Image (cartoon, rainbow, N blue to C red; front, side, top):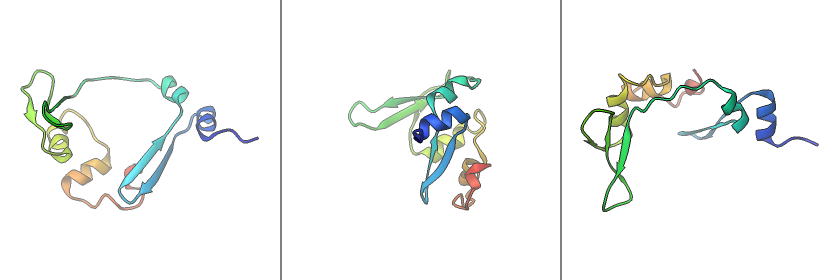
Length: 106
């Protein structure tokens, strides 16, 4: 009998990265695998919901004033000095075509 995908990935201590659509990738790994990895947590920003709508209204870095949320690109550009995004996100911010096969696997 074959094991379910999540169980088998955890047993092998592997993750699976697969492309769902042209613009969407999915990372699959087991909870046991995640728990076994060394982790470092750092708060880089906080999101604040609009009081009138179910959307993000503002965001802020620790110690800074809240900023109006415009879009993910604006947020990533603002955080780039604090967070080191993978190459595919850096390319997206600089206008490089991120859809090239395998680009987000670097």
